[in-house]
Image (cartoon, rainbow, N blue to C red; front, side, top):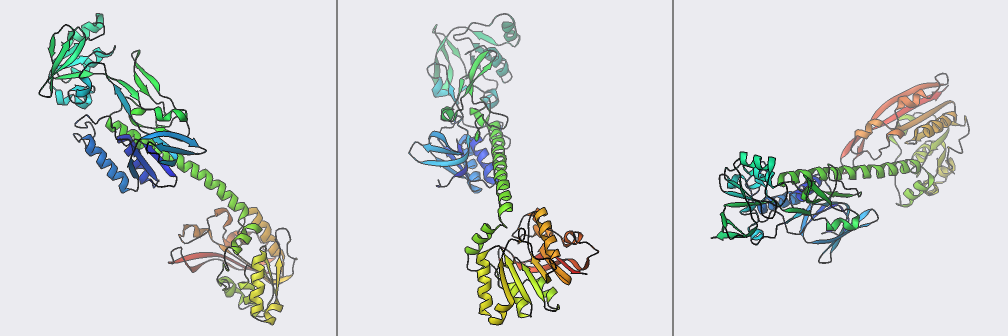
Length: 527
């Protein structure tokens, strides 16, 4: 059990819990299953009606389930959970031995307890030859002498149901009134024998049920006894969280309790799910497993929705702040250098043949582009909103000698608020200046206005095609653009378009592998 918060803690390691944990582990969630080691079907020798697993022992099924969960990275531990509480948005789960863990979501699959009639011997034979579910055990006692112990008004229906598996069925009225009218006729029509009198004990010979003893002393010979227990949800753990089991009635008779939940197991308390018998007292192993799967999928979807909401908030925050001065200062101050020191490839390609003049390097960073231009005779103004970047650029210029330092001027400004002088530069170069749509259009219009007649405007950005590239580090579709979009914003009466292109460029991916980036390149000359 790790110290960090799990995505999901599953309380209960039966079919429902393991099935939910399997779905969540395969969804790449961190999952911990805590199992108290008290499976309801432990007394039974086999599991039935579980397609491809019919006849498997309950222990083998759970062992295989644990193996499958851990194969996908889920964890399973033995322990009794004594408390579950909420701490803000997180659940704290405490075990009997004092250990505790934390989870973003909680799936409770603690099952139910069979509350048996107070007849000596029933509990010891439970799951062997004292049975309750014809679909679980009917085939195994087919054509044998079966007694149905009446514990409520549904006893006649139970007898009719078991009649499907044997022609020798008896209804033991026990402490209930004998059937009358329509009910008596139904039983007689199916040749179901009604035996009146309270059952006081079970008769067992050589570890096998042979009959029941009535209060009169009479022994009724039987091979199997059917008992409808009261099904009590093991929901005590949920009480502190505000989840309470409710009574379940059939034909006006309370047959047990279960925790109310929707079709996918979500309770009325956010973040808490239930599955299996704790939520459905009629669930067999296969349906409990299905409910666990449904709950697991619903929990994952809920986590995805939460993560998406958080991601949207973070995305919008980054979109608002990532190109602002504080964010750039933080980025530059986090490392001695964040750029390679080499000029941008498209600047080299487009400016190498230009006659030197006055240049504006927009977002000059640590100065690589401005210094390359200065070395070729340009008088360069480098503008940036980061003082740290400008200090580094000035230091690099000084390292290259007085002449380069004299040809470079470093200006701290936000050109959105302090636009450059109109018609002042023979070259305006902006590389990878990505802003939200309107802000980018306004800035680029001001940059275009700063170009002198006969001067060149060079705009380079990340092409939206790079969103498909695993090596790309920016995922802000609304800030990326094509050269065609930038060209469309220039007045054709004022500009000659020299290049409107998407240019591939080799770069290193996240793992050092070579990937291809695509630059949106606009080169235009003012008339």
